[in-house]
Length: 358
Image 1 (cartoon, one colour):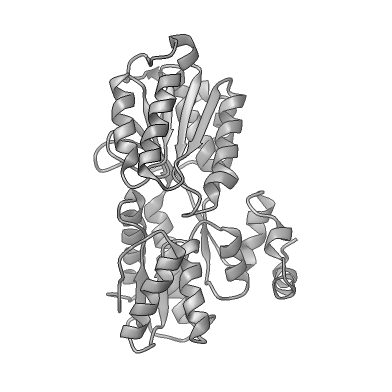
Image 2 (cartoon, helix red, strand yellow):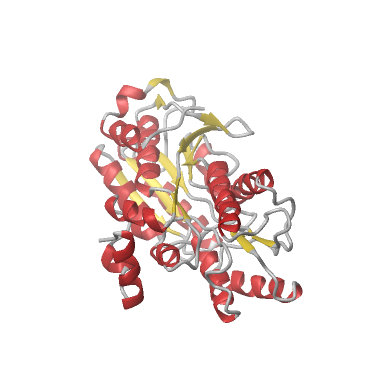
């Protein structure tokens, strides 16, 4: 399916009406607040601050800026990794009034909030993570994210002169309660199998937690007698946990490690050679795409979508890219990281100079 480029999505935010057609099937939004006020409000719930720094550092700003520029009020809250708080925030926002809800799921908490919103005829956008009951899903092409990670592992092994078919590869996936985790996993497995890696040497339970990932990987490494050739890791935060273990075993830099999010820590690990690459998902593109969908729904219009999920939910998919050390500067240029934050030690400054990060 055709996917959105950065320029296309950004342009659509400023002229959302151009891409809209028809009327929403969700009905007229209502709430316990006045209809006029509710119809001008976009209610957003972010999941936490621990799984990734992106939620507060980027998503909040880009969603707020985009919705405000379109003439709507953005009520953005963060559940801080608490499902009970997530439900409470949803109730509070619905009481104030919402014309649309943009929800990032956390351990299934978005499902209950979405159900209450739909009972009030308020359309719901699943943002970044899919969940049951959403009218639209806006995210990156998650299977592609996984495929890029998997390919980076295959390429990393070959660069070290190791045969992927005989390599011991540990799989470190994300929390299975996150609907994206399976897509990341399946995309990665597909690419790794195509490259010769047929099965994992070990596959601990998936989590989105750096310290738990470190513990899980340490246990897997011990069970393997300390022998590992590569580690597919679903994101940069988990990769940092894996890398901490590899440093202790003196294998850091000798074992390909994948990741995603292009976080500052992830980019630093890539520059230092401890992480092979990170999948860059420009948050602004994803947020802009969500704003386009939300604005359409606030105007009782029907957004367009590139794909559909298996359950038929319209899926707006944004294209990710792979960033190795020679591509870190592209993240800085895009404004999703700063050279001052990345190049903050003598060792990193030397790496930044080598790869043109400034």
